[in-house]
Length: 318
Ligand code: SF4
Image (cartoon, rainbow, N blue to C red; front, side, top):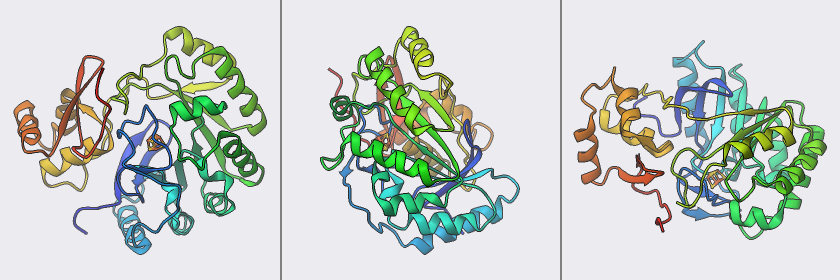
């Protein structure tokens, strides 16, 4: 099989070990448009589950990658360049992927867990990793900018309902944004919700890479300490991680660079370091040339330059 369209990796993941990523969603198709999204503003805001692609094509790629990487994958992970539960074949894909004998994880914003069909689809996974950044509707609208059909109370009800019947592991993630959801009031209300959902783990994350909106900032150290104190047994992730991208399957340095920047904005040094062994010719002028040709875009966040996919739409800095 030549280059893969839906599957990448395995890549090392802090939470999931060696993870084979599966993206069943077109670029930036989501029911949220989070201000911190590192893929930029949502291009297709929808709350309707769709086919998007032929499910057999996605499965073929998964089976191929599993075969080629036998013994080197800890999880097959569904994680979209958008929201994976919007793919209405997700349940079928999860169940078929699980037949390989490798555990399956789904990273989701959890918004559609109020729907019975989505809960059923995710029931087949070994680990579900939903996000929940706030329990307060007005903050939800500012931070996650959801589709108008979505309301946080209903989503939380759906998460609780899912917890009642799901026998796998439920690991939540909270993204903390300075001045938006890092106050005592915010964290206390989240704590009350988590006490009712009873997740197996809670991770906290902060926006380190360029967010969709340039005003987004990571919380102060004090707020992180507060979050740990209020939420209890949380695990920080992603703090100052470096690029951890597999370039397996790429024979062409241009394709490798474009693919990794599409999934994750990266700094010049990170790209050069990640590709050094396989493609030693990737350097500053190589990347600048790709930018000039319109294959990459460069943006600045907190004084640092990052390369991103040209389709990515970020807010304009004030
Ligand atoms: S962070 Fe996730 S849920 Fe939020 S807009 Fe981006 S893809 Fe969608």
